[in-house]
Length: 364
Image (tube, rainbow, N blue to C red):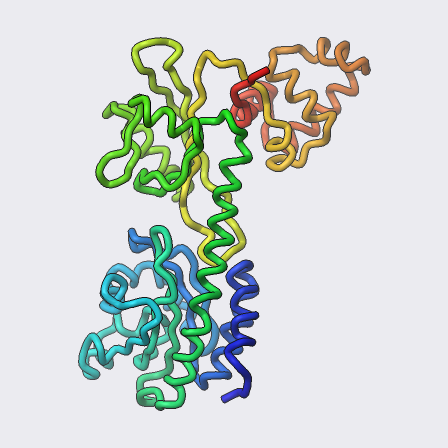
């Protein structure tokens, strides 16, 4: 076992929670400190989907690659709903030793390494997910010694405030994401099941007016089976990535909205692959203006390229853009070529479609 203090682990863990690529350094320190063969940290959603997983030590990498397949079957997952945060649990709390030795699913979660000896703890029960930490070693090495468990318990207690702090930072980032769309936007963040997690003031106004509502599960209800089906399809997306566009209306043209669903950008923090989605409701008849700040962030566009995008979206031809900018048309064509490359499009019409995702209500 290595000497050190839980304070050092707190430093490494906070760095790793903020940047998943740095997390193995914290887990390596923990294996040496506790004298455990393998350490894993995992984030799992309420729908039993793995949001993030990091491991260090002796591990069967082929088995580890199937961790998501094992998760649904694994008996250790029953502790998710019943185990208090911060309490150490062992397989002996769940099942007899002979079953652990012979049942294949016990050779996984939290450590898919054909391990057999396991101790773990729930570090956090966040918004729609849990974060767990575990140590493990081969079955034939016997149960963990008392001093190993004591060291692991001290690490768990030191990790609790760090995980809480890291999740507060992530929560602040998510709230800031709504602010990027501007004060007038009808925008919300939803999980895969359509549960409303956060929403803007103007989105709340739609809820209050009864144009849309929340059901008793907290899910967004568009008050139309057809529109709800379109929303569910957009949240499922393609290859697990949310995305889609549809419309809905409430009696009058001024109550017609274009609905755009895009994935929440994956953050570098641990558990950042949330699968959450951004839903923007744009009134169809409201004047629109492109958000230059979002364009720069999304496509790394220059000011000149943003200006061309705005004019294209407004319906100007290349010749009209050249006159308006007082440049040669060849200059505009060069800017357009750069925009095509940066936005991953091949035709001018495709640019307009892609730009429409960054157009929001315009108010003088």
